Image (cartoon, rainbow, N blue to C red; front, side, top):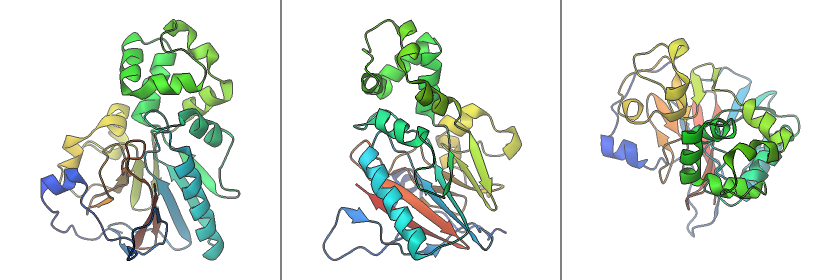
Length: 272
């Protein structure tokens, strides 16, 4: 079920991630924004379902642990049978502990009893290509923060690139290889970056799902699903009639954000 599109604010606001009042700010600013307040969502989940979707993590292990704790607390306070946790990709690079994030998620669902879906991000795609011997991808990865990730595995970024893969723990490599491109639930499509407008969902390319920006961000189209995505960081959550962006710059001085979707509403939890 979809509602009619409303007029989107200007393009500059869309790219700059205009703030959405999804929780009540305290009188004195705090580092914790995990108190939920809901607004109307452009999509709908059927009764008995709730989805927690976490945006780009970029090595922010402690923030991720804090969000997982907030989710577990919310589930204990408001139990529901059909809950799902989705991580939208970009687990590595930029932040302080990429390997810690991979180790945590590779060990299995981080919240007991909560089914978890882990999506592939463009940073993981580049890392996998580099580890498989793609020389341009290795260069790109080093420029995008891969050196810190390699050091987390005890790998010297200046060492022969052909030796990198054998030094990555098999469980971590298996986790990266097992990441999926998308997840569909009722009115929502969860992907890392976005979709190509005017292309059917089943015909979307991996490259667009992982890396697209302007053609998607500019689009006023009512897509076949409300796209929940990351990849394009901003200072706050973006809520539009056709998409919800929850990349709020974790790893680059911003917050790590979780969108909470249920029924016809959406709330936000975020932590530094």
